[in-house]
Image 1 (tube, rainbow over the protein chains, first blue to last red):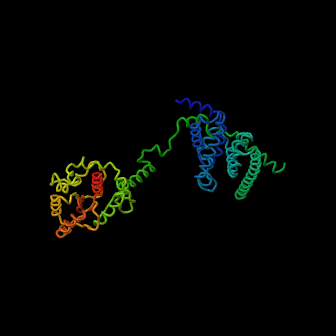
Image 2: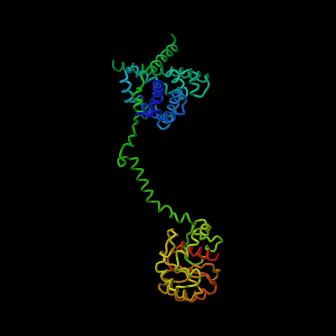
Image 3: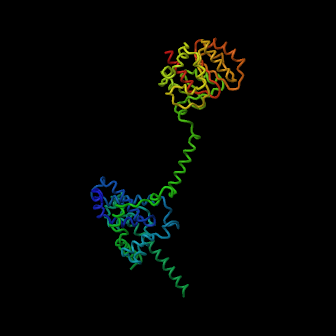
Length: 188
Length: 260
């Protein structure tokens, strides 16, 4: 039976769940299981719940998830260096099962995975700005508040991040096309 | 449409798709995990099947088993009194330092602790048979021999320090012939030698008697010397082995208290 504090916390968390999960999926990508990260961050938020201002729980969750992912990233080897979970199975089998069970289409999963992979090649702050603005729907001002920088700086990061993402995705598409054509040649 | 524009549109589509992507964990799953957190797998095992705890236990066990070898007994470190006087000069010289310090090895000297310690009033209360020794008025001349036979039991109870090593100890007053006689009896029981440095002023004198030494010739000299430098001072005779520092200091403090 949850205590009164747990009930209050869960009621506040329910409003942030979707946005937080989206953010957690991007920061946990290739590093750890989203469920573990979520549990860690939720426990931390619950511990400090009394000190978190009303309506700021999502901000806390995002900051905590980001910090936790950074510390995980320090401990783990580079995600795309060919070692560990990062390169071989960025989403992880468990994660794929969960997403399929929740109705994610296979081609959409592939494309999302490619996007996440490209996102993880961006510098940390740039990636965070793009994720918060594009995926989580925060305003530029909110992102600036979360990142502790000016709005102009956020806009700059967004612009550069998008440009870099385009380049990366185009490059990936080209290499994929080249791979497909060579496979076709071999088959024919 | 320019390639840049097309790439931009494609990126928008991908971002929108990712934003609409279903969350990996449903709210119910997240809530359930929060309310019933799963313990770490290695913590849920019994300790003897747990390599982490097993390793830690072994390290601790091994570490504790080595501890007495690696560090000296607490009594020695907390109370830096330790003497291994292999001859008289070694023992007496440090005893005569201004702070009544017995220094030994690398331990920094600091005997103030002893002088101010609650050991001072102990001798009379805990060793009634030794009153004669410390007061210089022997009421029971036979006390000396039993002391030597079981010296450790004669130590005051309040001194709970562990002696480094102890073979026998006895205190005599040089002015008392009976006690000198008892000392002689003691000496006659074993083969030993009394080393005595007559050049030292007799504040407290430790006579170290190594076992197996020839005493016959030395005892005469000792009697002469006892009268001369010691006067009415207490003499400690330590027979064989290493000196029990606590016993020495006990005597020293007792006499010090008696003078005051």
